[in-house]
Length: 195
Image (cartoon, rainbow, N blue to C red; front, side):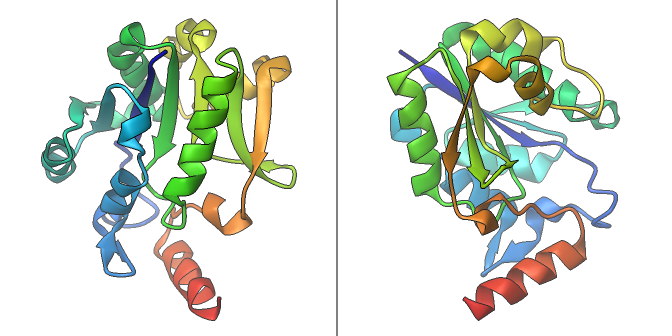
């Protein structure tokens, strides 16, 4: 069985004010932290959907393929569809990972991928209590729906469409925190210094 991975790194980061993927947390850019969380030994092909040359170059340095999204204004659904079309045909499952969760641990991603391998008919989603987050693994049965996505809604709409397939894995809440604004990053830095 092969589980592929699509890293979503194409957004315009309008609310952040600059390319947030190059912003640093604990001395490392967010995009590098995302790449380091990918358990490549458990995965098949890994692709990074991006509009940024610097991110594409870094992806190739990690041995990941870079998929250009020249229309990021079409929303995250467009990025998901691009990744699903490019990587899905060679896989039995697809892990979608966003690039702006600086506290996501590699061990958590391993748990998600390993749980999916135990039952590759399920959508495996991390959750803190009732709050679901990323990254998520989708089975091949969901690929047509993923490939048809567009607009500002990503794979989460499939969780609502196929609730009977969803299995959650409990994680620490801070791991699900994402960075949309500079204030978000500062809040994460502040909280992690308190821990």
